[in-house]
Every structure is written in C-alpha cells, then in structure tokens.
Length: 256
Ligand code: MLT
Image (tube, rainbow, N blue to C red; front, side, top):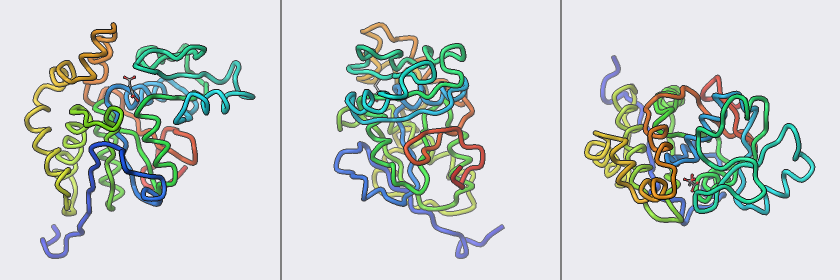
C-alpha cells in the first residue's frame, strides 16, 4: 500500500462540449470521447458485431470523398443528420442497425453531427478511446492501466451541454477513483460531473428519457435506442482511434 505522499497524481480534465477545442490543443493527449446518444454506443456495437473498422469523418462531403473508391461490398456509409439516416447512406446511427449480418468484416465510414466530429478533433491524440455507458468498465480499466493524465470530451449537442454525456463522464471518474492507486486531480468540470452522476446516474434510462436529445429521439421513433444506450457494460469493447481509424483495442495503453 503506497503512502499518500508517494502516490502518483493524475490530472483529469473534463470538457462539457468540444466547442473551443482544436486538433493542436489535443495533440499527444490521452482522450476519452463520450457521445452516449448515440455515436459512442453505435461504434461499440458495430465493433462488437465484427466491423473491421470505423472511419469517423466530420462532414458528409468527407464521407462521400473517402468512400469514393472504397464504396462497395466492403465499405458502408453510416450516420445521421438530425438523428435520421443521411440520403444515399447505407445505415443511420441506431446501434441496433449494426448487426453482425450487416457489419461483419466491413469498414464503416461514420458521419454524425457531434460524436464523429469530436473524434476527428482528437486525431493527433496519444491515445483516444470512445466511451459510453455500454463499455464503461472497459474504458475505466484502460484508464487505470494507463495511469496517466487524461482529458474527457463530452460530444454534447451542437456545442451545447448534454446531461447524459456529463453523467457518463462522472461515472467513469467515480469508478476510476475507487480502483486506481493514484490520486485523481479534477478540474471544476470534473467535480461537477461527479455530482451529476450521483444525482442523475441513479437511473440512467430515466435520465436518458428525460434528456433533451433523448426526448427528441423518442419523438422521432428511436425510443428503443435509449434502452440500448443505457445498458451499463453490455458491450465489453474498447474502441480506440489509431491514425484515422477506430478499431478494437486489445492491449490498453499501447497503439495497435
Ligand atoms: C451525434 O453524433 O450527434 C449523435 O450521435 C446523434 C444521434 O444520432 O443521436
């Protein structure tokens, strides 16, 4: 057991939205991107169901450009605008669309309004992992092994605060604090996310149902997605960005 004085200190920085962050600020950082509704959950589901890789992009134009020569049997275009499938794409952004039958062995180009855009901002990170409630423990285990400073970026909604992402950030920090031998040094946003988890994390599904984006998804027919996104540790995978591509990471802490 280490004495308090000799304990390592880990700086945890939380951003409630990716607004004001740019690629260079995030260069060489250890980053966790959270987009509970729904990009994080969809990415975890696709990889668990055998997708070869996810290529996140920050515009529909880039999705079309990248898929230009690749588009065909092995590449799918997925994503949303206002949570609905983009015209000409193969899939939307509902996790349940990404079945083994549809995604196994495929490269998926993913364009979403907030989640994929936030991931692209972190493309020069040292390590970048994608987190939701569905893979919470996998992310905490990774951070515990990493034992180094990290930044959590909540994808939010068009640069506004989203409760569900911040509650998930708080849950990750709460769980890590119980498991690490190091001391977590939190910024104000990190402290606030801990409290929000204590209050709103009591019933995650209820919180998702009452959230602005959750209500919107329910209104347009995606209420079932909320249950998938609320299921803690239901998808035990660690999606990690390497270069421009997200793949499953088997050895946390080292790049593939
Ligand atoms: C996003 O990135 O904005 C989303 O995941 C929105 C959604 O499809 O619900």
